[in-house]
Amino acid sequence: MDNTESSFIDGDIGKLLYRGYDIHDLAEKSTFEEIVYLVLYGELPNHAQLEELDGYLRANRRIPDEIITVIDAVQSAHPMDVLQTAMIGLAAFDEESEDNSKEANIRKALRLTAKAPTIVTAHHRVRSGLEPVAPNPDLNHAGNFLFMLFNEIPDDETVSLMDVDFILHAEHGVNASSFAARVSASTNSTLHAAVSGAVGALKGPAHGGAAEEVMKMSIEIGNPENAEEYARKKLDNRERIMGFGHRVYRAEDPRARHLRERSQALGEKRGDPRWFQILTHLSEDVMAPYRDRGIYVNVDFYAGSIYHLLGIPSDLFIPIFALGRVPGWSAQCIEQYENNILLRPRLHYVGPMDREYVPIDER
Ligand code: CMC
Image (cartoon, rainbow, N blue to C red):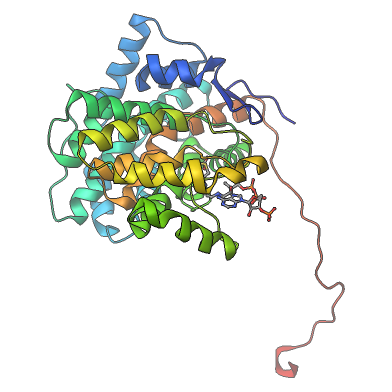
């Protein structure tokens, strides 16, 4: 097993640390900007360090017009495909794209973190027949994302909700997408290539796609009373209930708690508690027996209900996960570059051996 200093997970007790700090402290007390600093530099920033990083993020949100043209050309694709395309396209406009020094990679990581929300929101506006909204330097990272999405200054509570969501998604060890990024980095490919590859790996429903699937499931269920029958049918067919289970956690995913509380509060505030009720019935009653097998809710279980209540279209749920994860992917790559070894697993060959080649006319 290789060493890492980025994050620690104890799946048996549901413990998660970013650079040694407990996720509960970080979710309750810090901001996404602080987490970006922590994940990339290994320490929590002081005021001056935070101000500098925040200023850098705010100054680097704009994306080149050429990238908007690319987004326009591929607008019918899934937002994750557009994000991946635009992110790798940004390499063409980044003078440091081929510089794999740690300092350059941290700067690129910050630029990618700053620009990713601009890509996602510009795409959503373009495909909706609207003009992209320019970044607003007066808003923090989370607030600016919401502003560019809806062209409205968001209220503080919504900004704080999105900020916590980004914090909870910022880093999570060598999950599938971070591993994909590390594999690219292990060939000494560039950060743009590694991070855009990670976007592709995150897209699948077994990884980042679960929040969208949970919301689809909640809409199909419609009412808490239907939850049991719906889940029973799925489980009898040996299908999975989205938002449950995790490769590492055999206890509740510690990130879920923060989104559960916020999903409940937002549902009540918006006069639409139904989604939270459906989710609660699923987790507390229907799926409770599965806890003995280590199957609990994961980070994606409550996230979809929050995004839905905020009026965010369901195919933007995975991109939101990606926006939070850019610093984590980058930190994983930087670790990989620092102590590099080519990641090249071997598979056990089970196909036929030594077959005789038959010319095409004789087949
Ligand atoms: N619903 C019902 N049964 C499940 C579920 C679930 N969500 N997850 C696992 N199981 C069962 C599975 O059927 C298997 O049963 P059996 O031993 O009888 O065949 C057993 O638990 C072990 O499953 P596994 O696939 O070997 O477990 P895994 O560790 O490979 O799976 C997982 C992890 C996340 C792919 C899986 O739990 C899953 O598909 N969950 C639903 C999708 C989801 O919510 N993904 C988001 C993950 S968290 C965000 C992120 O970090 O990406």
